[in-house]
Amino acid sequence: MSRAFHPFPLNLSLEKDAMKKIILLFSFIICFTGEISFAKGENAPFPQIPGWKLDLSNQVYDPNNLWDIIDGAADLFLEYSFVDLHIARYLNSDSVEVKVELYRHKTSLEAFGMYSQERDPDYKFIEVGAQGYTQEGILNFTTGVYYLKLSTFAAGEKGEKALLMIAESMNGFLKQKNGIPEIFKLFPPERKILNAEQYVARNFLSYSFLSSASTALYKPDDNQFKAFIIELKNYGEAKSVLDQFLKTAGSGKIDNAAPGRYDFTDPNNGNILIGIKGKFLYGTINCASKSFGTDLLNKLEKNITE
Image (cartoon, rainbow, N blue to C red; front, top):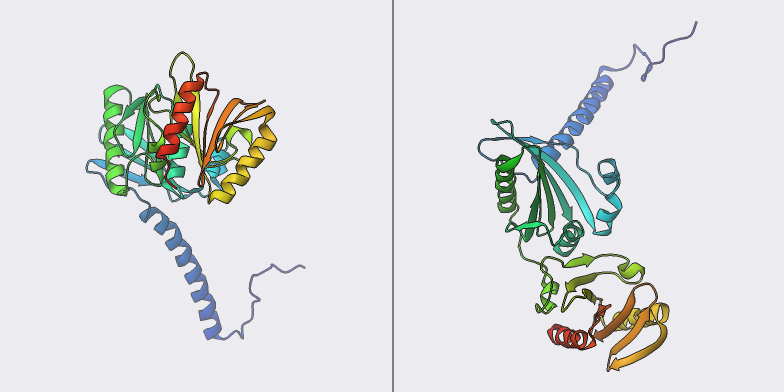
């Protein structure tokens, strides 16, 4: 007849002190595990708001499990140095519920970059954090190293007021330095399309060696085009990346448009006018007006300080 398996052999001669140590060890493990779960909820960066019940999720998502909640978009978030995601829900006595997703990134530029990938210049923009926008049942904004996505099923004005009030509370609670990242201030304002700036962390123009690109859209006439700035570590790295770009993307003749500038056709992206100054590469993509493009690059070069 087989014996039942026990995790510890049944030994009547086991000393009481040894048994006590085993019990204490298991008690410590149980308490320690409980403290970890409790701490994640208690330390999550969400404020208590009068009149609203705060429901915190103990589940914290990081680069190892982000796919569990946003499978289709996780890869894009990871490109922007995603650190972690906390989730909470606010509920008031009027049965209005607001879900808050708080994404933390390594830097404010990368948080803005992720935000910039999900906005559109035609959205309704609001003054909260560095910048935010609303759609029906949605309010997204960025502040410092955070990108926040708020949502509600409450319709109309009731939902809009709840989203804005909680967004402002979150912004005040997080106490981040607000404002569009400094590099975007280098783009001249003339003929620039509002709220269309983007930060592309990886694979700019589909080239693996082009990264950390800040872009803006311009429309001097009926033709719209993109301007860009890429910041490298130093001049040597910038020159190396430029040489690789010219070698890889250049098709046909590459004109030395001016000292430190090159004009060529990329078969995948069209006409490129690019320059180098210190650790920065700067340029335009498919600018139909050569005079406007040249003037824009002159201003970019002037604004860039090494």
